[in-house]
Length: 172
Image (cartoon, rainbow, N blue to C red; front, side, top):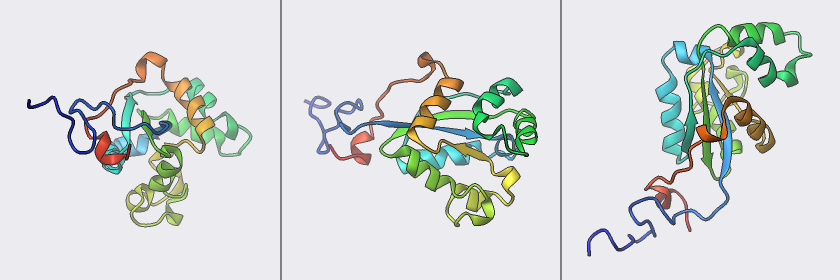
């Protein structure tokens, strides 16, 4: 009967049963320059087209206190006060993406921190010119991702769901 038989890749049409591999999560944040330039959709599009799954997203104007916690590892750098001030100057879009090797692959997709060093085809290589306006932040490790996700999102805000196309992205 139609709708009861899984298709050839093992999907049941409801997104169940496709990916048994460990799911990794990464924190990606579109910075104020990316928001102001209208690049939110383009950045989300690239992660979705790659096959990663969006499990959390907010549109927020962050406080300096939150940003100081987020960038605590840079607090001894001379640019820290300017970074916090800039990041608090407008809304940002923090997101949680899920998928196989999403932290490492997400960093490659973003490109080098300095857009001048970013290859064409990367988000920064295609959309940025200067390091102080590099439009995105991406977790640099699984451990950093867990910390950053916990800082920006509650457990209830991260949604567990299975897209129907998982079996077309991942092998069983």
